[in-house]
Image: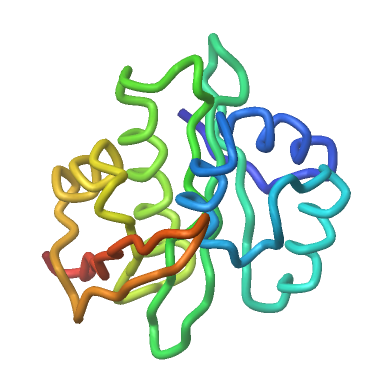
Length: 163
């Protein structure tokens, strides 16, 4: 698995990887705009945050692009892992775990982070299990988000450099 910086042309495939409106909100938390987004809207949303956000595509040598994530600079050595999505046709094969492992490595080795944090909706059990497997632990109080006429509980998690 390799990771590279996001290009404008990647936005189309990222949006295609999200199955529906519910998944869009679970992945974005509603922070990128309202569903549905166009590829141009997604690229513009990312561009507006370019001073604090680095966006990536993960590629498998045989499958090509398989995933996407972003790292936000939260200050004080904290990088926030966000907008994590794996191609819906390749989920359940360990690609998400490999991609998050690369995101962690990039954060600690290239960005000199001391902490990688994230928020994950509890209904997203595959992601929650993946993060726990990679060593992320609860790091702060849970929060409640309102979207699609319901409330969803979200867990704060983090992984520290020396763990």
